[in-house]
Length: 435
Image 1 (cartoon, rainbow, N blue to C red):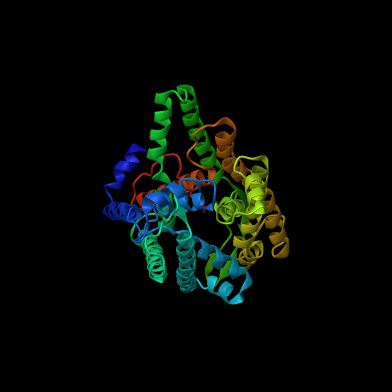
Image 2 (image 1 turned 90 degrees about the vertical axis):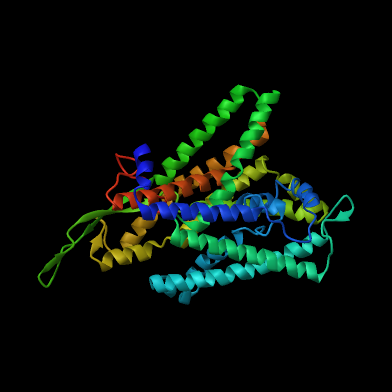
């Protein structure tokens, strides 16, 4: 592995891409600390400190702390993620978008352009809601907004929308000129930025005697074990054998080879826990703005760590794993493409029977993937609520961090192997989540 890192400096293009990626991520982290004008940041920080168990806490995690500071990157990359998910769902419903998705590079660029427009529209809507909502928020009897009114609203909406557009541009530049997926790396940087503060707080608890050294070491071992489990399941896939018939076209012979169709155990990735968290944390967010007995009762019943919350969390994760897998993976299209190029699964008829066979296997392995995601996401909250363990990383954050790290290392390794250098592992290469 050490040799693999040394080989990075021997490839000028790869070295340049890594430096560009680091520089753009530094620009992003600097922007997190630039405040939005017209806000009393100290008063707002004290208010957001009490919102850790609401939707604001989830958004703050993805924005790298930008929401609690109310910086120019407050909205973060969430509008882009929401727009991408909406476009993926509409692709199944709208035939024109489905046709565009099958037109290769040109269609992909068109869908990306629609995603950008959707990101700006969502940013304008969310920015307007935040600006109007902040005018009614107060700390100690005083408003957190210095000069409420339309001037503040327009300035806030313009600032937040511009910040999200700039983050989106940074992500695209990282993808094009750097290494790895830019949007994923921006989320990765925001989550990892919390690690030093969490480590300092843990060391402070050990030093003051509030937490024993044994518990601290146990947390470290548990984190390593959880990361190992995530790596194992993110690389896991079911191989369906595929045989291509031999075809003679002119004087050339095509096909006649055996390969396999890999089906990911966790096809849906981190989307299910994000959806599930957003739905379950919405009542608590609503209760913080609307003082009503009904919203208060629902919010208390769905407190993170309670039995009702964890049970619904697991149920929603399993549901969205199946739902998102059905949206993003179409067995009928896969079976048709195999039949088109003369491929077939041994013992299964091409066409409809092959699609049913693939769907049957995908349904089975998706259950295992959904249960794995549910366990990873529920475990930290159980440790925090039941055993009072200061576990500063949620399961969703760990899934994102490990998954993005695996994808990035896999791309670096591909650059090294392409230029005849050894990768990080001598006995095999790291397979990304889309392998």
